Length: 151
Length: 70
Image (cartoon, one colour):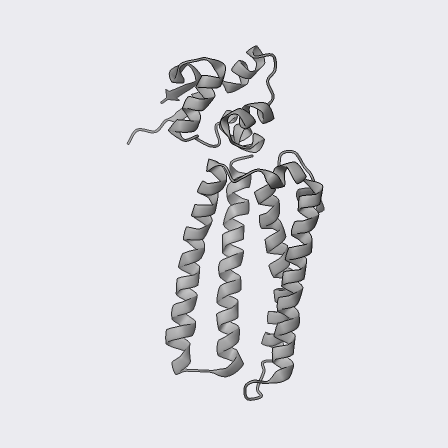
């Protein structure tokens, strides 16, 4: 991972950003969802301890992403300045198209189906999971597309 | 639809231009050096506009740089 995020000539800047985004999602949200599965919140809303845990998770995500992007820009200033070219744009469009399907499915589940069966933090966490999954899929497709056109 | 692929002469043409770097070619047509590497390796098919720009840099016709092979 460090090699990929470092200034390797063959790795496009936008692939590095996608790897960083995957890392920034997995590091805080992995433990968050593991905790939520092992200790499902049962207190009525707003359930401040769960809200605090989610706040810490979100802030951690933003910090990893923000600091990581600043570090990448510092390591590869020339690449960071380049605008997205046609391949970058094609890859972004493909990633968004796939992630959109995931997000729509997640929205249908958490906005239409689940409210009839559950509520509270279970529903909120399902919605957060849908967003996180869509983001992981989006960045995963970006990484896969760049690697496929390199190897 | 018949199966086929696009071949290109970019590596040879870069050599003939005094070992022009992928970065330099990319800069001249407005793409990254990694995209040039992907085009050169046949892993990415450029847009028609980018293909014309590449041919123009080498002073060649489009079909002297890119060829369709079955």
